Each structure stands twice: as structure tokens, then as C-alpha cells.
Length: 114
Length: 113
Image (cartoon, rainbow over all chains, first blue to last red):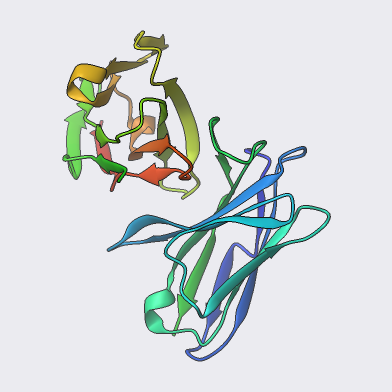
């Protein structure tokens, strides 16, 4: 158990809908990262938050947004969903702003858009 | 730009064989960090090891060993006496500069009993 909790584990929704994925980092970790894993693109970095502030942005679509709350949990919002958004979404956490140490990953949320 | 290449897409071995997973990285930074993660069939990503760029000492942990060579920009991972439970996708990853983890495409290892 990595200590990072993601909910839900599975999500099935229709095209055009909006979903929210939730992540609770390990106790004491201030950084939260979101990654998308799809068959064709591999593991792609989406966005990082550190202590409530956005720190880095990767290949995140404009239809996607995220935030980190004062209690350090984070949510990834995906809207106007398309079939191609079907993927495994991972959250990871680490203690620091700049990742010089390993990030620990949650079990992922498997999103299926039908 | 940072890049990680895992040229082996899939490897299949018979139980008890040794297997080496290759990882080649690219970065212009002199300080960087290399990682290996394991993704078993259940789907979670499990951290295995971190290596700093200024520490080329190889590491052994049980049946796992890692060979870091800056001269060839490689960070290879060897499993000795493989077991069925080693079947998974293995990812090599890199942190350099201010970028978060950059992953390779992964190598799917199948260990056959």
C-alpha cells in the first residue's frame, strides 16, 4: 500500500459527460501529480500541485482541470468526455516541490467513456 | 528535452532465467534522478529504486540489481532467477531540471512457469 488513495477505482460514463477523480496523498506529502496512462500514449504527465498551487503543467487538455484543496487532497475534473479519454488516471504524491525523491502512486482510476 | 527509451516492448522468459530490462535516457542536466517502477497485472505502480546522477554505484536488492552507466546513459535492471510473480510491466523514469517524472513506454515481462 503506497498510502495514496484514489477514488473511484472504476468509472464508466458517456461521451459529453463530466467526471471528477479524487486523490488523497500520503500523509505529509505536499505535492500531488496527475498522470494519464493510455495504450497508445503510455504514461503522460498532466499536472502537478504543491501545497495548493499549480506547479507544473504537462499534456493536459483544456477540457481537463485540477485543484488541490487546503487539506491537500486533489481532484481532477474531466469534462466534455470523448471516447479517447478512456484511460487509467494515476495520482502520485511526494514530499517536495521538485521531485528529487520518488513519487508514490495510487492504484489509479480506470475511466471508460462509452 | 528529457527522454527515456525502453527499446524492449515485450520479453518472455522461462522461470528461473535471468532477464535484463534496458533503459536509455537523455538529458542535458548534470543532476538528474533515475527510477524504476513495476506495474503488475493489478494495475498499480510500485516504486522499485531511485538512483542519483552523481552515484554510479550499482545496487543489488535480493534478486534485483541495477546497473547505472553514465558513459552510455543507461540504467538497466536485471532480475536474477525470475519468478512468475515478476510478470509485470516495468517502467524506467527520469527526473531532471524542474520536470516531473518522465516515463519510458515500459517493457512487458512475462515469466512462464
